[in-house]
Amino acid sequence: MKAWIYGDYGDVNVLRLDEGVSVPGIEEDQVLVRVVAAGLNPVDFKRRQGKFRATDSPLPVRPTPAGVAVVRRPWRWGPTVPGYDVAGVVVKVGSKVKNLKEGDEVYGDISEKPLDNPKQFGSLAEYTAVEEKLLAIKPSNLDFPLAAGLPLAIETANEGLEKAGFSSGKSILVLGGAGGVGSLVIQVAKHVYGASRIAATSSTGKLELLKSLGADLAIDYTKDNFEELPEKFDVVYDTVGQGERAAKAVKEGGTVVVLTGAVSPPGFRFVVTSNGASLAKLAPFLENGKIKPLNDPKGPFPFSKLVDAFTHLETGRATGKVVIYPI
Ligand code: NDP
Image 1 (tube, rainbow, N blue to C red):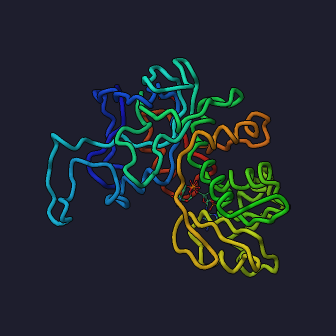
Image 2 (cartoon, helix red, strand yellow):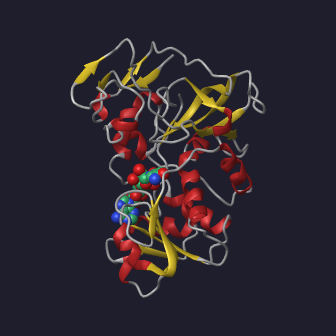
């Protein structure tokens, strides 16, 4: 099959399109998915840059257990096919798969823990093998590119709100409201949890977008410091890496959800767990159109243009999700 691969950590130049990659085999609890669209996440490039090498799946170049010398064991370690998010069609099912069948249109994040031995054969390929429990049936009103952008980001949005104890009537400030995760935190907080008031930050050109997503107050971070506003919030959800400042914008007794960077009390950081059941729980809000996936207007990028897609995502200025389609 065709797949994007890399055999060394580095910038976008380590990526290669290979037409001779073996289609992955499936375990008893897995299905084989023909990939129709794949979504990119910052974790894809952070992993490729080697930021998680201690817990990554093996690459051809790998430190010895002592962590000093570098050995090459090409007979044992293969290149990585990147990609967490997938939307596609089930073409084969393992013997212990209970609910999915051939022909089902599914979507999900294929690695249960993004930093802890993530799959070597990811979604940036014509086929990928995934545990049934990590997938859900694609909402029929969403096309494959829209569905492909959702899994990791919406699961992160939802898990962070759940862990923060967010509930109806509470207020929230979302840092990075126009990004892949932030655009979904706004919508999930409003429609699933019943937020009483939502504020969010972005640069000047994206303030209207924040309002259209459901923000009552759109804060231009190029002009205002959110932590200096008189208004404080029950929860601050930081997708940017501003944990210290975020802690100054929270009400007494409130909390700060931090996805990246430093954490200051009363904040906590967590790493998302992929979970098909969480997608299934959110499905009604996607099907009734209350939550609208937001894909970056520069995309979708065709499979051959993956390097351009990563280059765009890596600017940190993407709006919503960067998606690869068709594959
Ligand atoms: P994106 O690449 O989608 O974020 C891009 C957005 O960030 C842009 O729209 C940009 O808006 C906005 N942005 C950049 N700087 C600022 C700023 N100073 N203030 C407000 N907005 C800003 O990233 P994701 O949303 O996918 O991920 C966000 C972070 O969270 C990443 O570091 C990612 O690795 C991490 N993450 C962690 C997870 C976990 O489990 N811990 C899970 C998922 C993500 P503008 O152009 O207006 O600046």
